[in-house]
Image 1 (tube, helix red, strand yellow):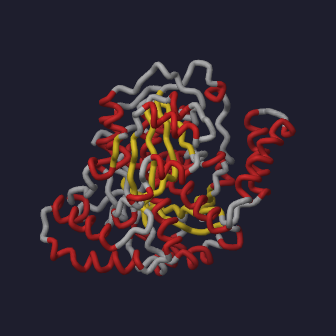
Image 2 (image 1 turned 90 degrees about the horizontal axis):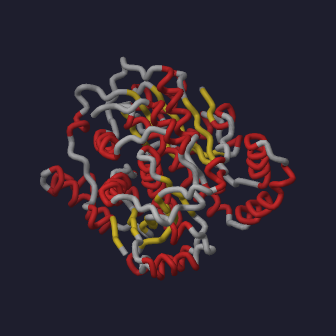
Image 3 (image 1 turned 135 degrees about the vertical axis):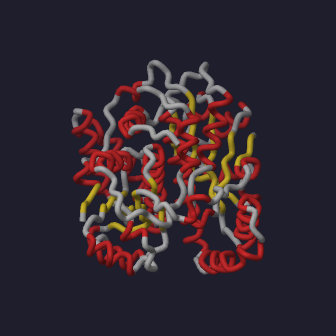
Length: 215
Length: 215
């Protein structure tokens, strides 16, 4: 693995901003989009459980419907691509079993050798209250959101992370509720319009002395 | 901004793994660590509110104490660096006021021109139940965790994201509770030991057809 300099990484993180106006004529090349899909699935999660589903919405009619329940925000229809980050609600022992089976498959080891791991994970996760488990899944999901946004920025692809939408209506439109998932964030991605007024604004962050404490 | 190829990004994301055994003799150079600190503060958050604090723990005695309440996991003391990701609990109107004041300062605009933005944010955030607000802050925090882990991986720096610690005890030891923050995740960072058995294991992720749906 050839390291990238942290100056390059910081330049990308400084370059990105929550794009409010996309150029609807510019599309992310298919190979790049495919790489961004891989980037989000490579995000780590607690116990590796990946309590998430990513819904990439390409159908213009569905995008139009989603925009209606996203306070009309134009990114939903104008961005080249859009992905809904959905968390697993009420993760259960079957989800853990599925993960354990996947470990056995990928690492080519006997399922039986993972029994104590499975029992430990089931004990740890199912002892949590539903609300805690749901909050936990939401946090893991946002690591994937971070990986997606990082990867896009590095590649010079604009994106806008969004929470301003009616989540239960997304769940209905995308049939996420019946599958046990909950739309929690959206990322639209593509290329900024030349006249997006937000592109030129200085990035606002608290000073490092306010955000970081050294002990 | 010079884009980085997505092949390079994916190579880094595939290279990284949750490092279980660090080489205690290898330290991250100060300039690189400083860049990683910047990387996490550059993460986006809902409304830009940055409901987080990052506690970088360098004091070996404090690290030893934290290890005791982290199920003895050796990364806590052996990694070159360690950062505690803490979320803001019960974000309030003062936090929003502080953010608004920072916008005015950074973008050099009159505070009064941001009054409607402030009112909107206060209305949106303070209408939420405490548990929701707390869960929301936790999710934002994990975007920053994602930015940190991405940046480290790209630079060839190993890291281990961890939730396996007694959060209330961290809050006491680091005096986070009295400041209105809650330790939620830890990232240890440094360089893998040559004999970390986990380094050679195949990365386990569900197939893309299981994680991603196209509509």
